[in-house]
Each structure stands twice: as structure tokens, then as C-alpha cells.
Image (cartoon, rainbow, N blue to C red; front, side):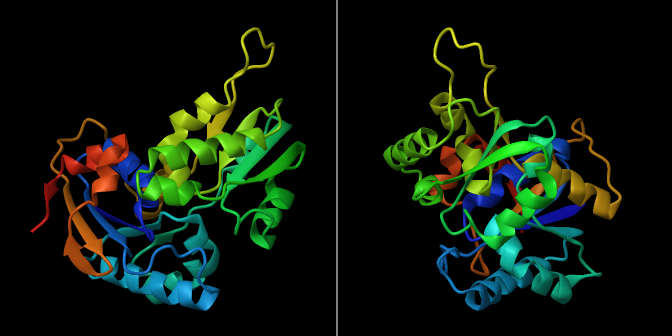
Length: 264
């Protein structure tokens, strides 16, 4: 089994790590775009063109499925990528986990990039899936970029600023950018309740587990964490063969992938 994942940068790592843990025997192809990142500030047409190129580079390795490990690319490029690759290669997009976060009602916050916060796309998801919950949209300027470059101080500042904009009685926080899952522990620490608080700890809701599970469903595969760790890793950087960038290895998810044999 071979699963490909794509993003402009290292936001694909959380989903890739889940696939690796659930199927250690799966070959992985990760395709990113260091020449064109970040995608967020680009026009939808430009972003779609770059995302298609990254998707086609991954598709050339004949994966059984392709995961778009990026919320922004899913919003703008999912239809074009599906039109280009399906039905030969199933394409799975990434959607913020608003529905499971909101199912119990209460206060929910969505941390997302400034471009996504308040967008018609995100407002539509809130309208469709957050019935019964009070939702606060929290922009996180600079957080994805700091995560991408392993800028610890930048992450600290961006997380602290977003936490200050988050309601104090929030029950759940949806991570509306795949990069944010790489610093989930820092986010939880910033949202920790004061000593003696009667409120339960904040829960984080990412997308990586659901996306990996959907990829398996689309190709009729089962999770098998006990399978032999024989899966290989192929890294594509704007279509060129390469290795995991140094910032990726700063995160547990990247180090997990880095233990795999490189496909030849």
C-alpha cells in the first residue's frame, strides 16, 4: 500500500505520522512546494496551479490514495485535483474538525490562519456543523509560518496571542490549520485552566486521525499498527526528489517519518 500526502510545507506531517503509526508497512510519498510556499497569500487560481503541480508530482509515483494535508489547498484546489486524478487515485481533503468539537455544545473556538478566519468557507462549516455550540473564530497570525520554520519564539508569541483572544470558558479548540497540530502541546499549555478552576481541561480537535481513516476507507484498507515497519518514504520538493527539511525533524511526527527507509 502506498499513500501520498501533499501540502505547501510541513503541515502534512500530522496526517503522515498517523498513517505511519496505523500502517507501518505502508509506503509514503510526501510532496511539498518549498519553491512556492506559502500558498495562503496567493490568488485562488495561482494556488490551484501550484497545488495541482504538487499533486501530479505525487501521482507520478502511483499511490493508492492522495491526502491533501492542507486546509487552504482543500478549500481552493480540491475540485481541480479530484478532476485531474480521480477515479484512478482517490483524493482526500482536510476539513477542520468542527462537527465533533461542537457535538456536546458549549463554547468552541476555531484557531485558523487570518485568511481562513471569517471566510465564507469557514462560516459555512460553522453554519452546517456547529449547531448548538457557541463558536468563536480566532485568527492566529504568524503561527503557521513560525511552525514551518521551527521558530520557537515565534510559536510562543503567536500561541500566547491566540490564547488571549480565546474565551476563558472555551470547552474545545478546533485546529483549523494542519501546521497547528505540530505544536498541540504548546497550545494546550497556553490554554491551561488556572489552579482551582472548576472548568474541565480544554480539548483540542485536529484533523489528522479522521483524514487518515478516510484514506483507508477510500481504498478498502484496514489499520494494522502491528504490521512490520517496512514502509518506505519518498520526499518530493516542488517535484524534485529530496529529503525531509530540517524543521520537520524538530517535531515528533517528522522524526517518526525520518526513521523510514528512503525509497529508491
